[in-house]
Amino acid sequence: MSKHDLQNDYNQIPVPQAALQERIRQGMEQGKREQQIKRPKRLRRLVVSTGLAASLLITSTFVIPSFATAMAKVPLLGQMYRPFLEQENTGTAISQKQLATKINQVASDNGIDIQVIDAYYDGATIGMNLTATGVPNVKAEARSGLYELFKGDKRFEGTETMELVHFKQVKGVWQGRIEYTLGETKLQDTMRVPVVLTDVFGVKGNWAFNVPVKRLPVVEQVYGTTVKNPIYQTEVTLDKLIQGKGSTSFDYTTRSPKKERARVEMTLLDSSAKEIIHNWTNSTQSVKRTKTGTAAIEQSRLILGNYVIPKGSYLLQPSLSIDINTQPIPLTEPLPYRQQSETHPLEMTITSIETTPEQVVVEFSKKSSSSQSDMKLNISRSMRLLEGTEPPDGREIKPKVTVLDAEKQTFRSTFRLPEPSEHTREEYYLETGYSNTLVNTPLELRPIPFTVN
Image: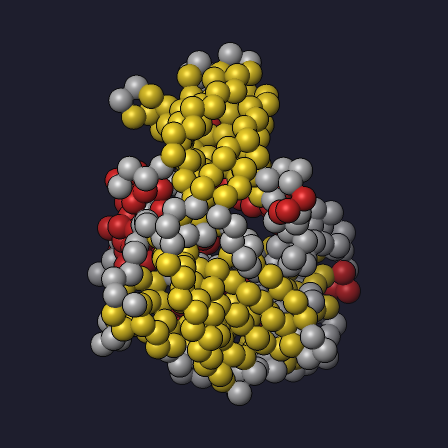
């Protein structure tokens, strides 16, 4: 299939824009609540479209079956989305095995009744199934609800979450599922989960629950196996396996340079190195993040929903992405201007900046193992010109990207300036997208061997 046909298939995929925007907004709200990991005031890194969509789809409470199904049919991209359709989430396996505990709590507001039918606590995942009655006739993008878990619970202070639960009609009944990965180093056997829904089917209100859950029988195996890469100054330790009745999760620890956050993707392989499941999100649930004088230490938890690993020998293949902060570059910056991480081989050099009243033309080169098409796509989505101050007060201008020499990896970005412009050359800033390209250029570490007894 040609690149043109692939792009056409991609452009024809139906995406519910309103629901997608709402999910992104909720993700931003959640980011404000995260006290464990500091984030910049404005999101600078837009992971390439496949990664962004996958990161949204992996959140089990926000499932868009039509989108995932369409993506699964697209060549190349389909390899990424098929595991999502097959893997689904922990609750699917729990329902099939009839292991959820009946709850039957009901909350009513504004004529809408929300009922928690049952709940489960499997491995490191808690979840609950909901039904709704008295539902108004609303469009598909409004068939969802905002909820908060552990609101006001001091045990989970700093890890509370506000998310979106999607409702769908099954045999005339509106059903939804909430699922959440626990961010605790030591998991409890029983707990009560405070849940508050604040906006369902476009109706604001208060539907509050306090759901008791008891952990299903679980097997934990401790490993402590470490793989290191001195060049990247990073090491990954597989701490333990948590095997529930309907899920598998891994706890692992990443140690990396203090000023560069290491994000890890994991691929589960069998003993012959054949891929079983690929974790296509750029980072997993962070349990704890600390810093020493020279290093950042992050304990994370990877959940493989609806999958229980059979006994045998396996490999866990970590792929490392480096996440760094970069600053906008004034157009008056002396050239050549070079950007390079201390631990990553990717290099970006701006060789010339030409400005006219109509446009700004930037020529630059990259040293990368990524393909030309990948780099061009990434650059066009991440490089931008900032007019005046940063948005929302200023304006972002995106470029047209041209490949000058594929072998030498040289490019040209052309920014058409809006008319009229009140800003002088000194008031424009270039955001190169180097950090975005960096986080999308993973480096493979040695695979970690482990056994399941």
